[in-house]
Length: 52
Image 1 (cartoon, rainbow, N blue to C red):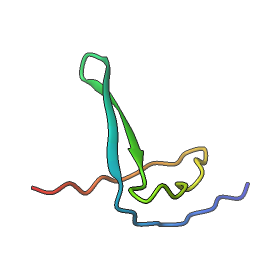
Image 2: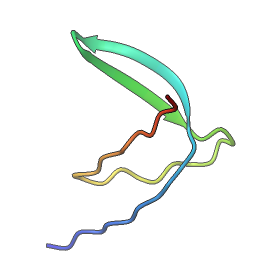
Image 3: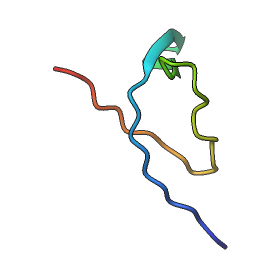
Image 4: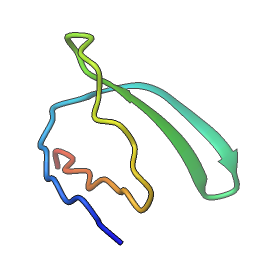
């Protein structure tokens, strides 16, 4: 089994926030310049660094 691990830091814009269940939200993020985002991979996750 081979896994690829590539860290990418991107500044993204919140396009949409949708409540999908109690305590659960779906966030749609996009690149502000319209560039494509990295493809999703099984096991992928993101870390959000939000301003205080």
